[in-house]
Amino acid sequence: MPAERRAVRRFELLITCEHGGNRVPRRYRRVFARAGRALASHEGYDPGALQMARDFARRLRAPLYYSTTTRLLVELNASLWHPRSFSRYSRRLSTRLKNDAVERYYLPYRAAVREHVARALRRGRRVVHVSCHTFTPRLRGEVRRADVGLLFDPAHGSEATYCSTWAAALKAAGLHVRRNYPYRGRDDGLTTDLRARFGGRYCGIELEVNQRFPKGDRGRWNALRRLLVETLPR
Image (tube, rainbow, N blue to C red; front, side, top):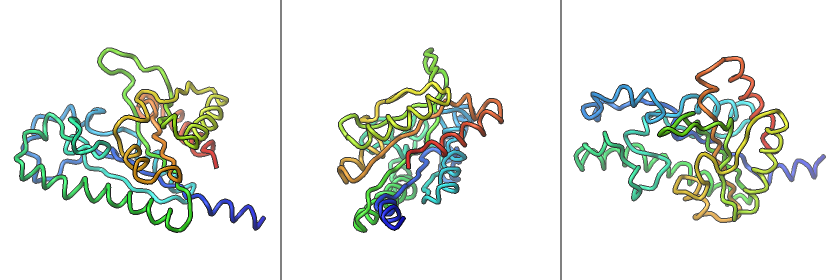
């Protein structure tokens, strides 16, 4: 038993949710005056993602970092050089207000997550980071039929192993699971940035769940969230 406890302490689970809400802070509301439909859709936030992230954090006693500011203001899951860092709405902001949004929301969030990982590594631990997202069932005419997607870097051995184990458990429960779907794990994003900064002792997984679950039958959604927590490789 002591050996088991020592082994567990070598790893630290971290949960994040970059698209947990669609709030527009007052100072930026002018450019979002006609964005109501976009704010309520997958463009504005990831429905169900924060609820899912809170389940992981509460049941597994893991730290949680999240944002409830709309991704249409500034995209926390993209580098600032990326074209999608500002939306078609926030691009209309003045340079001063764009910089203000970056200083108030983007940089503090990124810095807090990055420093948490750095502290864990300084304590000699490995970090398993699960970034919680949901995806729209239909995008630009394409129907996305998967229930769950697991995004990772195939060249990162621990991430590939971790996702294979998790995917197998979810498939055994009857779910349609795809790896590196509906996006690629090596695309620009928070986990990609952290992977480049911290190397092999950091394991970054993006969990993507089809929004037909949080927007559908409550019983199925509750059951899926329980299953995700219970099957997360320990």
